[in-house]
Amino acid sequence: MNEGILIIGAGGVGRVVVHKAVQNIDTFKKITLASRTLSKCEQLKKEVGGKIDIARVDADSVDEIVSLIKKVKPFMVLNIALPYQDLSIMEACLRTGVHYLDTANYEHPDTAKFEYKLQWAYDEKYKQKGIMGLLGCGFDPGVTNIFCAYAQKHYFDEIHYIDILDCNAGDHGYPFATNFNPEINLREVSAKGRYWENGKWIETEPLEIKQVWNYPEIGPKDSYLMYHEEMESLVKHIKGLKRIRFFMTFGESYLTHMRCLENVGMLRIDEVEVDGCKVIPLHVLKALLPDPASLGPRTIGKTNIGIVAEGLKDGKKRKIYIYNVCDHQEAYKETKAQAVSYTTGVPAMIGAKLMSEGIYKGKGVYNVEQMDPDPFMDELNKQGLPWHIKEL
Ligand code: NDP
Image (cartoon, rainbow, N blue to C red; front, side, top):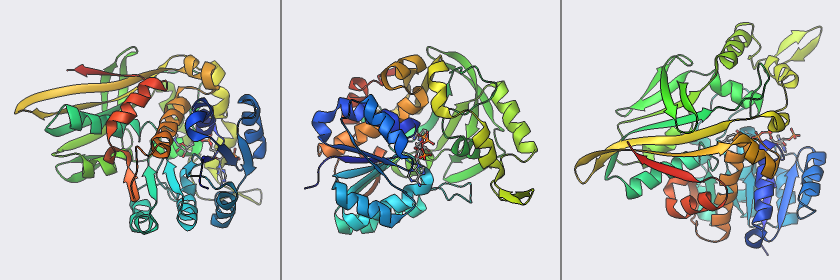
């Protein structure tokens, strides 16, 4: 019998997925959490009153995941570990014939570059096996893709311009810390920027382009153009698109620290020798920085993530803004995780819920904007991430 979900990864986002899945236990019936460090799974099991099963797994090993899946026999696997594990978990799902979902696209540990190519390459194999893979089902990617699909379905005949706007106005009181996995976060932020215009990718220097955006419930914030993975699939799936860009806010203190760390080589991901030991500077930095999970109780303020879409409806120009505001302390009260983990974990659970209920189904590998956005938008309102639409 294939029932229930297997969640892999017991970090900040994994904790939210577990809490929200337990709130929806009627849908999932059986929830298993597996991760590299069993004690984190034990802690979460305690928090949710023992309502989940737990296991240890090294998700870099396809064989280990396959044996775990054979033991647990889930309907689907939720990959909430790191982007490095996407391919091993996808492969294990293929070998065992269970559905797959993740929140971030594959990245090789030695190359700070992420793209869908290797995951999309599973499409044919998933089709043949009769299973579904749902990629990028967090907030961005994830809800931002759903917002675009919703705009396309209900508000436009053609969308010409999309700006994705991601603001975290949370304050944790430290001079420098990252609010999700420091290694993944710093690799992303220090990379070159890129946006898509008239069928071509245009590269920028890291954080070269800045605009000030007035975020509802937060106020005006410096927002920097970055490359972000949802753009790669949205350019394929949104009709009539002429340009898509992604902006994220950063405070001055964060940027000054990051530039300084980069200038002294602390963001390097190649090995260096120190007193006869080989170390990777970014790994050393990760060990020194506050664990993102520890930021939860001390982070105050809100996040606001959304999209501005501009295009034509019935021959007339139209511009709309769809966004969600999430409060760090409210998220913490519910799940003991701050809003960045919360806004990622809730959509991952929603994706799994819609797949488990048979509302989202298919054979092959999909990005979330290929699904009907309406049931997802309804669930966002019910599961703690209400959204707003403004005509601009
Ligand atoms: P964390 O570092 O807090 O958690 C990752 C978890 O995965 C840890 O529990 C870790 O184990 C576990 N893990 C790592 N490697 C392995 C392995 N080989 N085998 C088994 N378990 C492993 O990260 P987050 O929770 O912040 O992020 C989780 C995912 O969510 C990432 O892929 C991230 O990119 C993505 N994300 C997506 C966003 C979106 O909006 N789409 C936004 C934010 C994050 P251990 O405890 O032993 O270290």
